[in-house]
Amino acid sequence: MSTAPDSLLRAREVDGTFEDIPVIDFTNATATTEKRKELANLIRDASINVGFFYLKNHGISQELIDNAVEAGKRFFALPEEEKMKLDIHKSPNYKGYTAVLGENTNAEGRGDLHEGFDIGWEEPGAEFELKQQDGKQQTMAVRDSGVMTGGNVWPSDSVQLNGFKEAVLAYYHAALNFGKLLFPLFALALNLPETFFDDKTTKPAAIMRILHYPTQSPTKLDPVDDRQIGIGSHTDYECFTILWQDLVGGLQVQNTSGKWVDAVPIDGTVVVNLGDQFARWTNDVFKSTVHRVINRSGLERYSIPVFFGSDYDVLLEPIATCVSPETPAKYEVVTAGEYVKSRLEATYAHSAN
Ligand SMILES: O=C(O)CCC(=O)C(=O)O
Ligand SMILES: [Fe+2]
Image: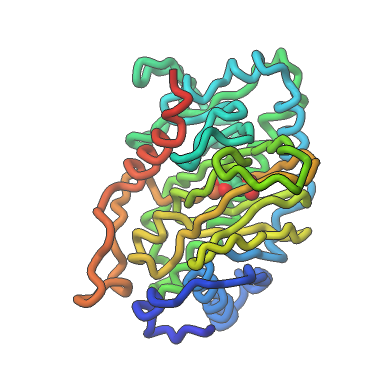
């Protein structure tokens, strides 16, 4: 379906029973305005109808991806007690290590079958200082991000991870630069000036996770126990997510009739999906689509999502093109930081001691 630029509000009514996730070529992201508008039209259709799309020709170097994945594999291979030194529950702002079952992304679930390592914004080589926050001691980058303020935690040199931090930060910054190209395209897709998100994304509120999904029961004959899977069904909390996934498969996206559509891995692409901040800003014109992971492949699965939020102090107010007297604002207005933190608290609540 193609959506004329003046019909954003009518787009809320699309039925959302997609069967496929579109593949979009990103080559023209920095081309002429006309070409960028064509690209933005494709992004608009995908954002309205599916909330997910693949991007090919994204420009992130394969070497940076490989290095980050290998770094993740080395980290996850450490003994559990070593990884638990970076336990995410010790961090006031959810950075560090999440053990298998440490997260419960779907409140009705029994814990997620993945382990993860989370970082947030960090300038390569930044100065750090030790601070107290929420009674927990943290190494913090000196930057105020309101309720989400706080720095990253890293494995100590003694565990010999061969450039772990460098590889992880190198991918993080490449993904960040790539994500910055997407905000103007989303603005065009909403019939807004390309610069609309510039003053709302001055301090990249981007969280990156390296995820490792051990394999679930190898038999494909069992009915799937929806309550304990790789990652329980959920929506993402930020504006959009750039997800690199390996070729193992297991990511599924739910359409409005309840059907789970496989986001089959396509080599050389990243998956982009929209999150709740965009749904709130656009009054649900853009879809924050429910998704989950079930890894029944018999193989270990790795993925790297990078979640792009607006600055944490920005209010998630509906955009003028997405409200009208007939379609009033749906969501309570909160700051991005308050929203993300409340969702993270809920996700980790079951495993907090
Ligand atoms: O691993 C994946 O493919 C998806 C991860 C995900 O949905 C998330 O971390 O929010
Ligand atoms: Fe997600």
